[in-house]
Image 1 (cartoon, rainbow, N blue to C red):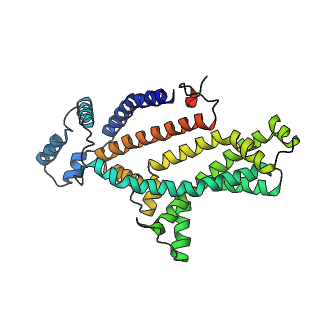
Image 2: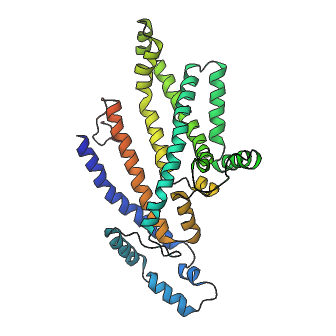
Image 3: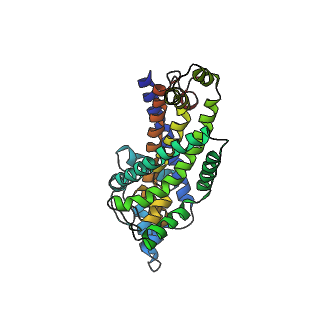
Length: 315
């Protein structure tokens, strides 16, 4: 059953990619400006500009250009950058491991911190501790990522001189961007965990477990957390998928050489093959992460059946 569900989702990825590439390709071509003029320079002759436009295929209509792009994709070719002439797929493969490192590091910080804080806030929701955690998580969600990233850079790089402010390298370069991403992720996870756990604690079976004298640790692990895990896994998957697509702002601010920064550079330069390549790669990654989370639902809660309903659940 699970195998059939996975195959069905992977097949549905094809029309999804067709739709996304069509919309993205059309919108990019509708933007004002001339890529041939940008490549040739302001002082280039009209003949040179027309020659570049013809070489790029920009002299043809949008549908003809899109058909040519699809033909190229069927051969596993994402094209070459207009500015560096490097193979886009090779560049994505080169930068993607850096994004994976950043995403894994951020989630390694955010997941335990968010779940623990949310659990404490739910268990002590009427006490000062719970209210403090609620306020902290709300404040962390309200702070823009670019602001927290700059503050981290100022404090730990400029004032304390403990960590490098930017660049790509060993774990010292990874700490600050990971923290910048982990702050909002942990805050979101804390609030979802708090709400879900608080609801489970009010269920009748929890009162029954307490009445039977079930040990507190066993009750929380086998009854509370087990019944609250699905929304928590959903949030983790969404955050992890978005980080694997490249945290554009964070990677750009910290100069981390990943997919997010690569995408931003392509947008700034109007490098169409780079933008399209990053969009396609991001779509595939996000679908695969969500597919993985759907399959996990089945194993975490056997009552869930993967028949293609909302979030892969049976209706």
